[in-house]
Image (cartoon, rainbow, N blue to C red; front, side):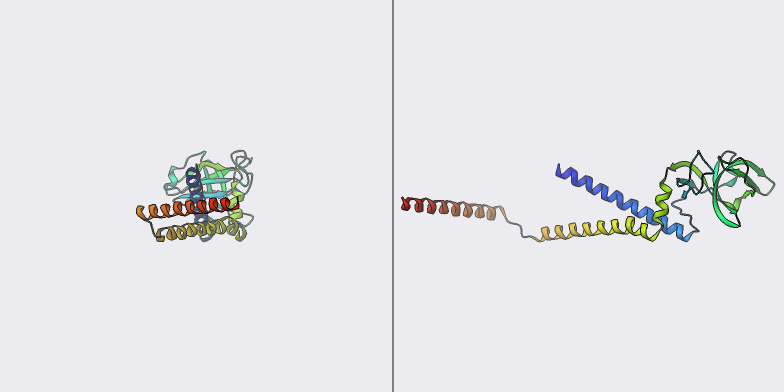
Length: 215
């Protein structure tokens, strides 16, 4: 039972470590790429408004994927793209409602599922970040946003990783000490057992003798 619990604990520790490393990669990747994390072509995005309700909502985490061929996009696909809102360049995720395919260029008209009007600015090839993969994690975007802060990164990533390495270092030292301990041969072990028995019998004999003298 102890062995099973030990193996289970080790597996859980490694899972936590791997998740911590993945989150670390995503956080640093997004910091170097205008807030866009990229892991092997997959892009986690935090939803920042309710314009796509009920498909997904604010603070959900959605997974997008890089697009190799913009001409493969179809009406009804949900894409994340750069656009201008209130004079600022921001990320947006809306559904394609119309495709304008000219001779040498292509653009897309988009609209949020919760909006009654189309977006005013068309989306061009260079604006597109990725296509939604239909994967969403409800409310997890809030966690990712917290992990991007210094406090969140320290509490959720740095401390668990430090504890993990300290535990592994302790295990290594204990194993090293065990390996360096001198091993006794079977003959030595038998001799120690024999001496222990002799000493025990002698002590018992002395105890009996002492009780006899008192009588």
